[in-house]
Length: 204
Image (cartoon, rainbow, N blue to C red; front, side, top):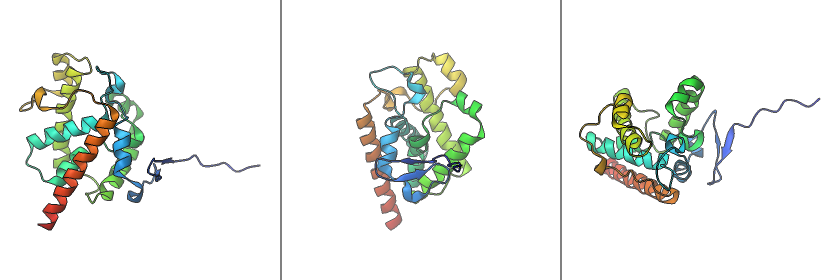
């Protein structure tokens, strides 16, 4: 009688890394894998207008833009805003109504992945409560414009779920869905810019 084999809990990345989903190591996290994955994960379950999916990578760029315009933050905080949905390069983008159905298991995996990603890049394992709240506000502003411009929500309906953005207008944001390779490239470029700026701040 053969023994019961444990289910595989790791994913092979294009970089060659094997990322354990239950116990992720920062050593198995690569920014190239994150950018590649996020650029191919669709927001809103793909139910958006345009020739291309509106990717999580592009959403992260929009959130970081809103966060930068609305706060006086250093590069470390800006990087955490850019990476706020980084775990989704592994677990995908689950819409909020379904997250509430799935429950705590999803959040546990997401929490561990966030810590591994942040530690890989020399960031605190998790943002503090104040920073987390600020990033969530930027995320909600982004969601309002994505909902109304791309996902078929009326302005009134979007206000009900996301509130009315203040100080940010649609023309400030990159909302035209872009090809995956472009979103991937822009995400990597912005990460590199913030990483270089952060290094210069540390060395100054």
